Every structure is written in C-alpha cells, then in structure tokens.
Image (tube, helix red, strand yellow):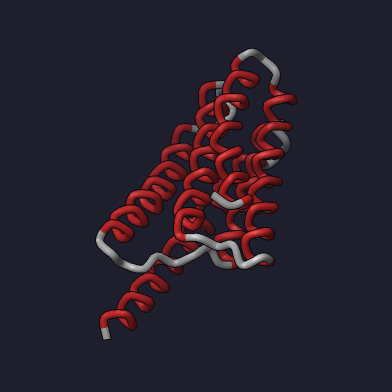
Length: 171
C-alpha cells in the first residue's frame, strides 16, 4: 500500500461523507468534499507517475474510486431533481460498461489500458459539466450532453486501444 493507493482509498472514504452532507442539505460542503476527492485523484496520479509508484492495484482502484464518486454525485443530483433521468442513464451505461469490461478483461488475464489524455480530459469535462448542473447554471444540461457524447467517443477509443494491445500480446 503506497501513498497514491492510500489517496485512492481516501476517495472511497469520502463517498459516504459526501452523501451525508448532501442529504442533510449541506450542498456547498458536499461540493467541497467532491472537489477534495478530485484533488486527491490529481495528486495520487501525479505522485504515482513522478515517483514510479504505479501499481496494478492502483490502475484498477483509481478509476473505480473516480467512477463511484461520480456515480454518487450523479445519483444525488438525480434525487434532487437537478439531473434528467436520460442523462443519468447514459452516464451509468457508459461507466458500468467501462467498469464491468475492465474487470472482466482483468480477470481473464488480458492487459487493460491505463488512463490516457482523452480519459483525463473526459474527467475534467465531466467535472465542469456537473459543476454547471450542481449549481443549476445556464446551459448545464446541454453541456452535460456534449460531455456524455464525448465520453462515449473516449470509450470507443479505449476499446480500440485495448484490442490493439491484446492483439500484440497474443502475437
């Protein structure tokens, strides 16, 4: 258990804190917890790469922590009536597909593709779009849909990279 993986574990622990704050009406504090989770994500990735501390466990847990936090925020906004069901379902289908696919391939002994710039950009775009939705700013839902479409394109890119990587491994 290295420092980047401990920071990832902190993100898992921040999820129930976010939920408690949001559902007790402390939206600003909950938002702060969500931002803190995002900062730990940036920090753990930076430390892992800079100090050569990237681990297989970290490559699996880091995106899972990110997806679970985003799912939690998404469900809280859905519950509050700030997020349309259609957008929530699209986001859930994409994220569930990524999580399940990655886990299945990992357990089948296939190589998984680590996060790349498109994945990181997708995360940044999601944070921006959810920020707009969270505070109900103008064009929030339109921006969110643009990000959802971009996220599906990013997922297709990951699938192509995965196929290419594992084709090389089999050759």
